[in-house]
Amino acid sequence: MVRAILLFMALLSVTATFAQNAKEHAQILRSLQQQANRHTAAMRTTAGVSTERVIAQSITDHSLGTLSDSINLNYGINRGSTYDYNTMLYPYNYPYSTSPMFNYAGVFTKPQVLFDTMMHWATDPNTLVYGYYETDYAGYDANRNTTSYAQVFVDSSSEPNMLYANTFSSANNITMGNWFNWIGGVADSAFRQYFTYNSSNELIEDSVYEYHLGVWDIVSKTYYTYDGSGNLVQIDNYANDTDTSLTLPLIEQLAYTNTYDGSNRLQTVASSFFDGTALTPYIRDTFAYSGTYTYHNSWKEYQYDPINAYWAPIFNMSKLVNGLGLPDTVYIQGFDSLMNAWVPQTMDVISYDAANNPDTLQDYEYNFTAYPSTPSFTTVYYYETYLLTLGNNTIPAVNDNVKIYPNPATNTLNITQLGVPTGTMVTMTLMNVSGQMMSREQMPWTGSAQVSVATLVPGVYELVIQDGKGNMLHRQSVVKE
Image (cartoon, rainbow, N blue to C red; front, top):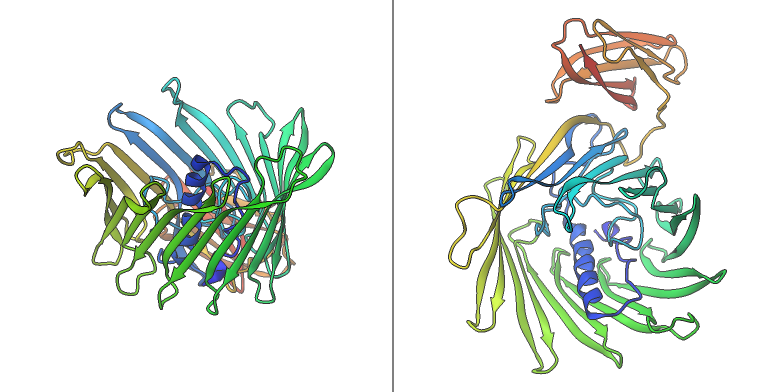
């Protein structure tokens, strides 16, 4: 089970302020929790399975009566999405960010949304105007490792603001990551990160370097320790945030100690941070599970009070599970120290589609007396059905130079430049947006092919092209006029 988290622990900032520790603690927890998030129906690895992936998301702020955030996603061949049942604290339970390093812990080689392009609109917090915010582009190798990533924000007309690039070993372990600032049309590398593994392919060390005055100086080093079952039980991060010369010895800034239950599910996380003199207890989290579910249905968090020397309760989340084993109601409580009791904060109610993917999340904010009758926010997820043809978690070579025309088409689609030898048996399948097969033709490849759309109802369809073994050769949306 540890394979899902080996590459998720590398982000530990050199800044050891209290606020930064709070942010990083949430990131490290999310990363740890993702190891158990395999309950969803998406991202199956069975050849020829028709499944769903999220292609858009919208959030409506009912207090304003307008959209406050939305995302549109485009994918390549055989890449989908996985919902995060563990955290369920925010509308973004599909972790969209796939920046390979430094700004999000948990997205090095297997991000949960394997998009090629993401367009993001949001409300400006200063003007409260809803508009375009950014477009992100991701690149992958044949094993779905994130090899490149670019972020283009609204303030950039054409050039990317940030660039990321990763390299991987033959075991699909990330070995080096680079973070570039795009300055004056030149990619100016700012940080570099190296990763070291043991003979069991477990990440045991990573080191972060900053390009400073023409020299790569080390700014952070993190060590990872595992138990006999391969569970990550200790994380120790060393840095020196007060050293502007980047020459002084590194000091341990953050430490995480984790425990697991008999089913290798994360049970407790105890964190400490450097207070300027020594490591000091900071946050303690406990998780509880129902039956054999891999995601927790209870999470409590406590913060250490050094003045009074006790653990103060601060957060409590619990989930109700429906008959299919999916959480459909999530309650979040905060601790009122004056009342010495847990008090409600928010309630999320989730509904699912026929594929057991969430389609609507209603967020209700407690008004000190009761939950309102109408939600404060509504998140809607939109999906497309696609044919996943993965065998052993590898993807056959595909030819993205395939020509399909005319598109839109009235009667016939022409296919050329498929990139397979003459005589290769190929299958052309047309599916509607609900995933229903509308037609399927098998033929030997002769250098070109035609697919009839004459009898189809006008609309959007998916053309899936496979070889005789079921390997995906190409997939493309087509429009029938």
